[in-house]
Image 1 (cartoon, rainbow over the protein chains, first blue to last red):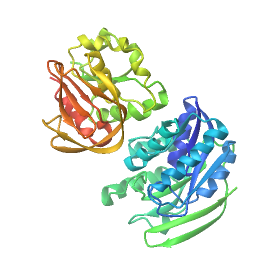
Image 2: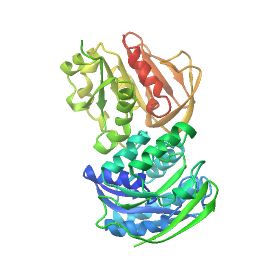
Image 3: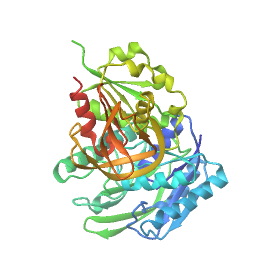
Image 4: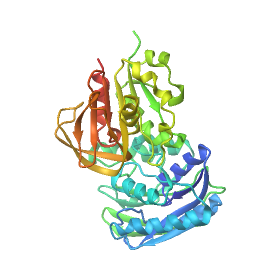
Length: 222
Length: 186
C-alpha cells in the first residue's frame, strides 16, 4: 500500500514509518504540519522545518501544510494537506506515531475517514519503555529537541536517546511520573539517523531558547 | 499442569493493523503473565479452540470490513463452550453468528457509556474509546444488552453461553476489563 507518514521529525512518527516499510508498505511521502502555535493541540512543532532534510535522506517528497494551531481548525488544515498528498502521490493510507492520545488519534481517524484513507497507528498503546528499547535496538539515533516538564531542563537538550537516557527517564518516571517516551509532552525528539535514511544527518548549528523546565532546541541539519 | 491461555483472533486484513488492534491486547495479558496465542481468523478450527481457555476476537480499522465477507471462518465459535470476548469487529461477528444484524453507526473517540449491570470491573458511567462504522442489532432472545450510550448497544451478554461483546475498545481506556474477563473465565 502507498502510504504517507504524518511526520513531526520525531522518534515516534519515523519509527511508525519504519514498521510500515518493514511490513512491505511503500512510504510515498512525509507530511508535516507547520503550526504557528507552539502549544499546538495536535502537532509537535520543534525542528519540524528540518523534516525536509529527513525526507531527502529517505528519498521521498515532503508535503508541508500550515495551520494557525487553533483547536478544531487544525484538523481541517490537516485534511487539506492530506488531500493534496492523495492527489499528488496517490497515497492509499496514512501512518502516524500516535501512542496514547485519544484526542489526537480520534482527530486523525476522522480526517482520514473523510478522505477514504486507511489510517495506521502501529505504536498505539505501546508500552513506553518497550518503545524506546525498540528504537535503540533498531538503530535509531534521535536527540532531545524540547523539554516541558520538571525536572527536565536545558541540560537535556541535544541528548542522545540511548540506554543511558532510558535508564535516567525510568528513574524520573518513578520519582516524578515522567513518561519515559515523552508521550505526555515531557520531551520532544528529532531523528538524525535510522534504517529508513540513505545517510545520517549532521547537526551544523543549534540554538537553545527557553527557561526553567521549558526549553526548545532549533537544530540546523544537512 | 499447563498454564491457562487466551486465543487472540486477529481479523485485520493488513498485518500493520495488527500492531494497533491485537498487540495492545496481547501486551495487557502478557503483563499479567497470561499466556497468549495469536491466530489469523482463517486459521481458526475446533482443535485450536479446544487447546485454549478463553477467546478474544480483536477489532480492526474503520475502513477494514473484510471480516464480514466470510463469516463461515468463525462458525466453530458457535459450538465453542469457552468464554469469548468480542471487541468491536469481534462483537459484530458474534452478533451476526447468532442471528443478529448490523446497522450503520459511526463513533470515533471517547464517549461515556452507562452500564445497567457491572461487567468485569466496570460499573455505572464509564468513559470508553470508540472506533466503528457499524453497530449491532442483537437477537434479543440470544443476547442481553447491559450497557448503552446515545448511539448504540455497547456491551452484550449471551443469555446462555459465556460470550460477551463490547462495541468500544477496552484495550485503550478500560484495560482492566480484559484482565477481569480472563480471571472470571470459569
